[in-house]
Length: 390
Ligand SMILES: [Zn+2]
Image (tube, rainbow, N blue to C red; front, top):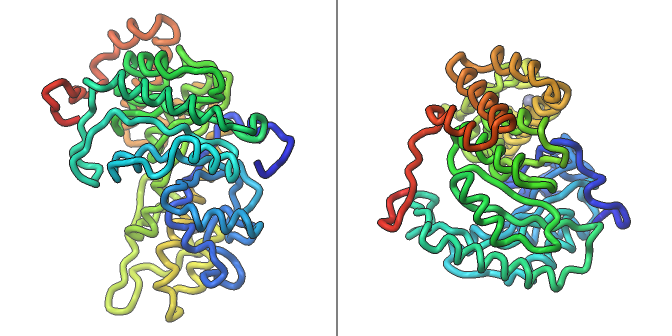
């Protein structure tokens, strides 16, 4: 939307890391600036600038509109979430599919269609969800109707792209869902993995490679053990990949600081007896957030900023590592070497198995690949009519 005539897809790189704005939006206002700079990555005056993000219009809609309207937002490739989760948590639709599309079209470049999520939950926690296999097809049908309703009010085609979310917990279900919801006017797809296991994500990726032919966004790809799977799979796919994550935000939530020299390591910064457990951030991290962190840590109001600065540092670390992987991912052997040298041996071996699984599926088809590598998949706690836990 922001760039007028330019087609949104021209703004994409081959692989796009899309940090979720999350709690940093609360620090986007002038009263929270430090020396005139915002503790964010998506504004013109941010301490660190990164031109891609995802906004959840159902948590932070008003703040985002304000930023957009007052022109302080960095020109970006912006994604907007669908609100499907809200329906599940709040037990009802906050906005219609048409209203959601109109908001997305006005404020963002890419919007996800409102899906009817085939899960049940008895409480507002993400715990105890059950996968609703019984109503799976019905949910897909409702999703399709919502997409059709939204597309009727769509005005923008070059400056806004509309992605449909594919639900399911395995290859065959993804396929079934996609076959039901597919309609003309969908520009791209969203996919996700049912667990944090890299093998499950590899299966999702194989579904993408063998069945889709449009840009694909992967939802909730927090750890490097997951994103690395996407980098490996990308070599087989011609359209752009994008993936989002809000895991960096554990800085603001738990003061979890990702160590700059060891991505999988972290330290939790605590305040004990009026002193922080660590203060010399700029001595071992060269990122702009750590420079500010070191300069304010002894100020009386440091407490207000420290969590957000740690989040900003964490997102910068993610950006650095993905920028590096952009250089090597097209060479499968280099990516394998990276995995061997970077992860602990057990983890590395599991990831290399996932790479082999992807290669075999591409060579011999999904069924043959899955059969050969069945042992790398955890026992899927599959839900049935008896409503076993997912
Ligand atoms: Zn840093």
